[in-house]
Image (cartoon, rainbow, N blue to C red; front, side, top):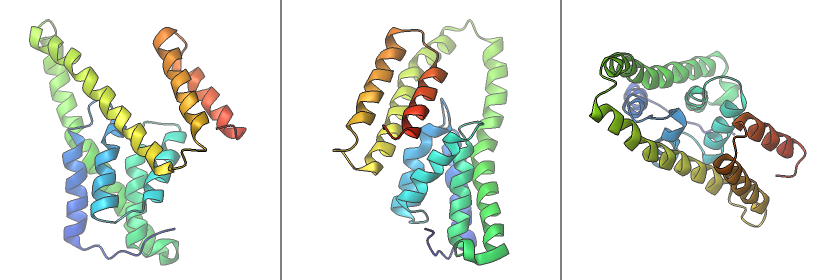
Length: 200
């Protein structure tokens, strides 16, 4: 279900600017910025519904490719809402394309430039104590941001009596990752199979 929005040029600039600012916070991957994207687009601006937001992430994560795809799907949905949904015809498709371009360009441009320049610099100074300390120090931050994204997606489901198998599966997968050397793709495949069978 799409929302009916009227987005001005300044709204589109704010949309682009938000992704531009989040780009430099995506240490460890784009998905860790999902809580702030949710705060801005769903809770503050009301440009997306919570269902659209969660569905955008689920769809992008199930597709092959980089996890930054969810940014494009979110941009598409904002444009679709601004173009009166699927009934808006080519106007709606054009605004959806604009949403994809603005979200991806805003998200990818600063981080790509920064990554290119800093990795070249860090490679030349890889034995520096500060560089090694930064790499060790940023790891807990990335883990905490990933956990907050997972919590946001779980909280939007909001069916605790029905969700106990998901919690049990999550705990089991966490223990397997922590205590064994099983490749993560096996765990992802098992979770997909359990979901396809309707067990979780």
